Image (cartoon, rainbow over all chains, first blue to last red; front, side):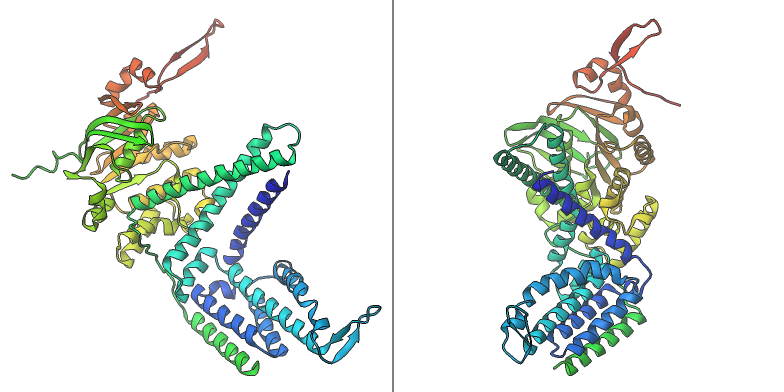
Length: 269
Length: 272
């Protein structure tokens, strides 16, 4: 397998995993029972509260609430650790790592050998960055894990996202599988007719040709899909069915989240 | 004096020529499709059947000639007008050969609701119509599924449901049994047979001669964009030389008890 094939296989794998996540969205948990609009609004408010808080214990409290939500929605800490906490820690850790050394302030420790000073203010800054990112990422992933992607898209309408954008995102999600499979089939059929390895330039030439073929297939597909839409009455304006229904639990959770966020804004100033 | 609606053809195709860039797909084609009839368009791949269906559905327009729908010209200008376009799209439904191009919505439910929503039906009516159609096509259990997760047979049923939900008077079907396994193909044929006696006009493009007698009252045979024959299924299926000439039959090889191997073209008709 060359680089292109490995990348495609990785993409397909990631997309298939995204579909597996939809099984969790069908589980019987607290977040799964809520109206997607309530989840989108509630989680957005909590993310803003965590991002704007200037006290670590307040961010910690929001994070603890996220853990409670996860536990009551059958999302295991193991899954969160693998999907969110470790990747987020690595990503923000790289960014936050220099902060304790470069931000001036009270020196609390020196790196043995090199003697670089570690400041309390620097550690605090790095702590803020890491905890805010971990909290925001945990909340966002909880939304995705507890809601089918199509419902999340529809719920975005509550934030006044234009219908046409929601429809485009939905169609992109629908056809990404088809095009990835098409690309994989093309590469596999090529591999089945090859003996030995291609050299670098030939490999790049073939990769470019495959991209071109895929591009023309995409254009053909988009034309055909447009025809199929026209055939069923599409005339440039998209209409959607917002078939959401709020229940008492939705209002209770919304009030609870709003109260928690208000407290976080107040105490986190 | 007003014309009797039963005598006005649903589609009247007059001297139509259509080209894809330099390739002629249809040339000088004239035919009429009467109301309530089940029509089969027969021809090998590339004979112009699918192109004709696209023209009849107002998705492409002839370079030369004219098509009318219930006596009214079917042109790009006419389809720009909502007064013509909305009733036309409600009255004429098309099922494409490749179900993947027709299943563009994120879930089966959204797919079936797409047509009624675009025609701006009230929400209650949309919900009721979709529910009824999902039950009628026995696909209620698939309503929250993504089309990506469906088998080809299920996809075909969803595409049919997404068109039938509008209760069209005219149904255009492009190769309805292609790529289906034998059981799904048989279910599809049963469904098409079930349309017999209804008020619907059904135009089916196919090269599967085994199903023609079941799904059609009249046939049009195409070859390289031209109409070469027309008649009842029995009349057409009797003309073996025509079927061979238009690549609709092929030779079957078999070995006799004597050990002799030979081949000849034949059909597989059966009636109970």
